[in-house]
Image (cartoon, rainbow, N blue to C red):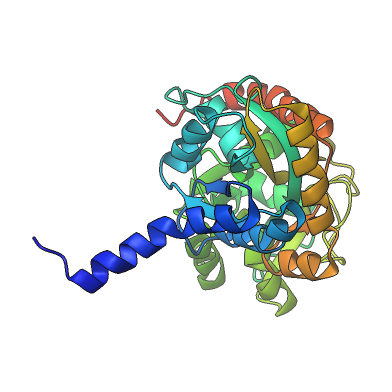
Length: 322
């Protein structure tokens, strides 16, 4: 099929944009590779960072969406890219922790195939029940769940997610048979909570915060060591004396293994400056994330620590995505 001449010219112009950017700045463009489709929170985060990072690095920043397999396609692409600082993965804890622990087909090794650059954000999971459930604390919910199988079912945004295993561990630690009900995203789980088809859920805080504030659901607690900025009136599990849920999910930038330290340090410093912007911090909160930059060494320790702490939980649950 012959394409219209105007369409062909448009494609040629788009293909030349990176070359034009390189000619203008003297530097090749930096690609932020996102493992999810355009329009999602990961894509929004990448474009938000790219908007200001270009000025800090003096180079064009291109957001490259390579969606599929829960982020594996993007991770594999970056893993195989040249370690020159021009191809960077916008990663998250699901991609770097949960997938390697639950999916045998994962080809990359989080600790060996990537050079940690910087943590971007952290985000919370919220232990939530319907407004009709007679529970105002996690302890009361667990007590109801001991007696009522429906109250013991909790919705999660995906099978094998952090929220899935957070609930599993919460049940195991408190000798309650909590059962994860996986959904295709948080939105349908929230709709079932609001409609009463589901009595509990462990879900990203952004998805339930507006309904909590409107009195339509009750967020009983969040994970982490500090209260979430979007719901400062809700306690952490730690505050309630429920130990072992200090770590939060995160997003981060990772380069291919072998990227020179000087390049990693430059990317780290530039990104931290971007994340210090009050404007960026405010916009991140609207995505349900909090700015939480780190050094490369801190990110490396975080990744290793998460893999170590979640591995026995996943194994004990018997869950596999294969």
